[in-house]
Amino acid sequence: MSIDLSTTLGPAWFPTPIFTASGCASSGRELAQFFPLKNIGAVVTKSIMVKARPGRPTPRMAETPSGMLNSIGLQGPGIDSFIANDIPWLVEQGARIIVSIAGETVDEYATLARRLRSVPGISALEVNISCPNVENRGMVFACDPVSSRAVIDGVRRIIGGDLPIIAKLSPDVTDIVAIAREVVNAGADGVALINTLLGMVINTETMRPHLGGKTGGLSGPAIRPVAVRAIYQVHQAFPKVPILGMGGVRSGRDAFEMILAGASGVSVGTATFGNPRATLDVQEELEVILTEKGFTTLRSAVGFAHRQDRQDRQDSPEMSGE
Amino acid sequence: MSTINRYAQQISAQVLSNKRVGQYHQILISVGDVVKYCRPGNFIAIAVGGDNSSMVLRRAFALSRVSDRGEFGGTLELIVAPHGSGSRWLCSQGEGALLDVVTPLGVAFGIPTEPVNALLIGGGYGSAPLFGLAEVLKSRGCHVDMILGASSSSKIYAPLEGKRSVNSLKIYTEDSSSGIPGRVTDSLEEIISEGAIDVIYSCGPMAMLSAISTIAQSCEVVHQCAVEESMACGIGVCMTCVLPVRQDDGSIAMKRSCIDGPVMDGANVAWEVVGKIQETKE
Image (cartoon, rainbow over all chains, first blue to last red; front, side):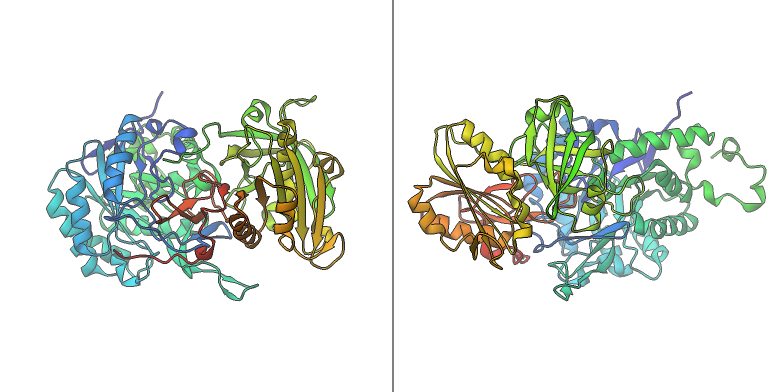
């Protein structure tokens, strides 16, 4: 019996819940060498900005226990080149596309939304309000409820009801549920949890910060429990709001954990650096696990860890009905 | 638009032998048919630490020697310095171990169509890919001189069979422990003019590549260098291994050394701003 892996993020439908993660797949071209992009749920592209951007100085990377710090600084070609070159190529591959956007001001996000709203072939927008690799930490909109709301509100006004908007949040906040509430109230169809955590490595030979940008974003299995916690908390508070989960997923088991916590979709990021096939491997492993646990649909597993304690003993996946 | 090496494949490779050579390990792996597409200058990205390793990133190594003959079919030789936890793990893998590898990656050294006078310069175990290159150049009728340098003689990688593939070999050590005291760049201008050198190929630390580039430009000699910048993925998706490269219009672009390199034209690399490019706000 084949399992129904399909999922939705707001009005957008995907045949499987496993996506690439923004910033870990570029625009998909390189990964297409290792598996057909149409075989996964969607390609989430690297956050694109209005203008081309060189990014931060090197070194941009430091491996850490079960993770890594990156300090790329949103290097990219700018929206015009992205729309002219990358989107048509992804459409040609038959890939579903979630475009991640990043801006330095509320207006820049609106400009990006305006440029993208009529581009065919896009399934959803991921609004990255939480990139830690910027000169001015004040740009991390997702650390402030008012700024978070302003960005999403601006994008929503431009997009109207055409495309689902997913707000990508930072775990570097005291109360992620409060930020999630603001973006949902401002019109986000869903939230992406979590972006990297801000970290630092000091090189003990040079006795200075190792990264050119001094601080960087921590990703990889080291942060997975933080992601699972954030997903669990937000799903508990807003059970109807779809969550795209991410943070250290490298196996089907890890994706299953996030789905149990409340994720309707899961992005595979840093694992791709260690294994170019990681996204597809995670998807195949997840299908086996869901089947073994007795789920017939992905949807029935979403948030399954939240079921009432008193029902635990009798509960089986089949009885969990939506 | 620059793209990933179109022959790159993720495969399982078996360790055929692992020998200690001075401070380095010479590891021979069996890779099958993909060897047909492997060229000197290409590299390999290897997963380290086994399943559920806490080391989440691949390690990149230059291909030292490529062979499609012999009883094991296609083989690659790698020279590995056991400096970090990942390379130490790799050096501990014995005969029969299986490795998860992606190869061939990156741009290979350009091979001249006419016989030329080539000078190969290696720093430390950066000499590893140069011996394979020397064999290819010799087979095309080139005259091949090689100079190697390191801080100390124990860090020079120069296997006996490698020495046979070059017309001359000079060794420099900073501590005078073997060869000529000093650095590979000390008498480079004389070596270029005396040997009527047409092209320089180099591999080693960035400071050495930068110094060679300056001299190569003043002598108007082509300089193909294999750069090294720390990489997370090796396949072009992470954007960590970038270098500032001058474009035709004079602007500087941050280019991925795994996709647009590792072999680059030394004259185009903006060495003076490596690690210094700041964010520009337009």
